Amino acid sequence: MHDATVEAPARPAMPPPPEGAPLRARFRFLDRGGAVLAILFLCSLPFVAHRMTASDAIEYYVYDRSLYFDHNLDFINDYQGFYDRNPTGLTQFKEGFIDKRNPVGHAINNGPIGSAILWAPFFLTGDGMARLLHAAGATTAADGYSQPYIRAVSLGSALYAGIALLLTFALADAITDRRAALWASLVIWLGTPALFYSHLAPTYAHATSWFAAALFLTIWFRSRERRSWLMWAVLGALGGLVAMVREQDAVFLLVPVVDELLRLGPGVRHPDQHWARDVCRTLAGGLVMGCCALLAFTPQLLVYHTLNGAFRPSSEVSDKLQWNAPNALRVLFDPGHGLFFWTPMLLLAVVGLGLLIRREPRLGIALATGFLMTWYLNGAFQTWTTAGAFGARRFIVCSPIFAVGLSELFRRFGERTQGDRTTVRFWVPIIVVIAILWNGGLILQFVELDMNRQHLDWPLVLTNQFTVVPQHLLGDLWRMVRDPGSFYHGGAK
Image 1 (cartoon, rainbow, N blue to C red):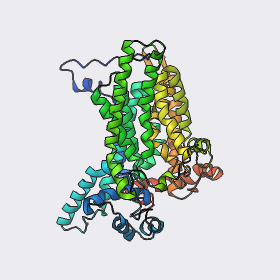
Image 2: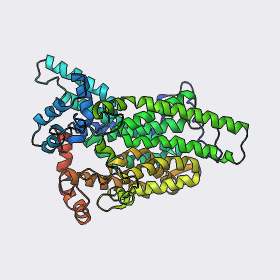
Image 3: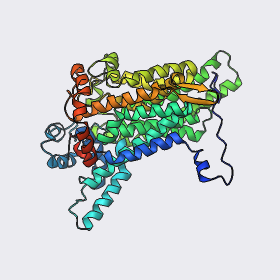
Image 4: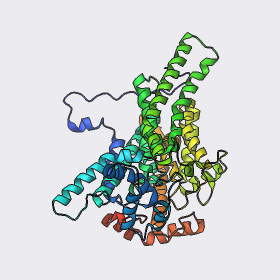
C-alpha cells in the first residue's frame, strides 16, 4: 500500500557495527533512550504499592480469584473476603457490592475482564509463592487474598506500564526523533496521572489499558504501509484486547479505519483498476480485523451474558451515557476536574498533534482520532468528573498519542542543529522538570489529604504546592522507600 499524501522520509537504518568491534562500540548502536527509560522504570519498581484500592480494583481482581478458586463468576464470597479483612475501609463497598445485586439478581461487577486476563500469569505466580510459603511453615494463606497474590498482580500491572512506556517511546521516536521522544516520554510517565496508576494504584485498569493501547498503536503504525493478512488479524485481536480492558477504549479501532480512509480517499477522484483492487483488499483486511476483534472480545461477551443475562454491559453502565456529550468542554477545561488543569503539559501535547497534522495529515489525523473519540466519550459520561480520583485518569489510554504530540512539539521548537550536531534547547528539560514536580506535588497533596479529592480548589492547591508539600516532602519520600503500601490508602489491606 502506498499513501497518496507526502510522507516524511524515514530515518536511514543505522549500519551494524563492524565484525569484532569491542563491546563498547556495539552498545553505541543500541537504543540509548529506551535503555534510559527501562533503567529508570526498573529502579522505580520498589516503590510500587501492593494493596487493593477500593471497589474498582477489587472488581477487576475478583475475576482471577473466582475463576481459579471457585470456577464461577459469583463474586459475593470474594467480595466478602475482602470486606472481612478491612471492614472499616470498605463500608461503602459492602453497601454497593455485597448488600446489592444487579437487575437480574447476580453479583454486581461492572469491571471488564481484560485486566484479569493480563494479570493471570502473575496471579498464578502469586499462588505458587503462597503455597510454597505455606508449605515452609509460614502463616501465609493460599486463598487469593494474601500478600503474594496482591504483590504479584500489582507488580505485574506496573510491569505492563513499563512495557507501555517503552512502546510509547518507540512510537514517538519513529514518528519524530529520539531526543524529543525521550523527553516527551518522561513527561507522559512522570508528569501525568499515569505515574499514580502505575505505582500507587496499579490494580486499577489504567496501567493495563495504557499497555494494550500502546501495543495496538505500535502494531498499527509499524504495519500501516504494507499490512499482511496476518497483521490485519493481529491488529484486530489487539483491538479486542483494548476493548476488553476498558470497553470505551474500543474507539481506538477507529484509528486504522480513519488512516485507511485517508489513504484511499484521494483515489476517488481518478479511480483505476489498481485503486479498485486496493479498496477491495483493504475492505477485506478491515473485515478480518473486525472479525478478529470480535473473536478476541468473546470472553467479555460471555461475562456479560453470565452476569447480566444478555450480551451487553449492565444498564448501570450504559445509562451513564448521554450521546450528545454535554460535558465535552468541561472534561478538558473545568477548573475543578478538567484534563488541562490537572495536567497542563497535555495541552502542549494536543498542540503538537496539530503540528503533526500539518506535517503528515494522514498520520496526524488518524492518531488524533483516538484522542478525539476518548474526549467525546468522557464528555458523554454522567460521571465525567471521576470525582475522588487522581487526575483525568480516563485519558491515560491516550498516553502514546500525547507522547507523539509532545515529541513533535519538542522536535519542532525544542531542538537546534549546528553543523551535523543536534542539541536540545535549554527550556525543554526545564519544562519537563516543572511538569514532573507539578504532578509529584499533586500526588503528595492527594495522598496526604491536603487537597479536596473531589475537585481542584485552586487557591488551596497552589498554596500547598509551595508551602505544605515541601514541608513533608522528605518524610513522604521515606515512607515510599520504607513502606509504599502505606503511602496511599484506599480499600482492602
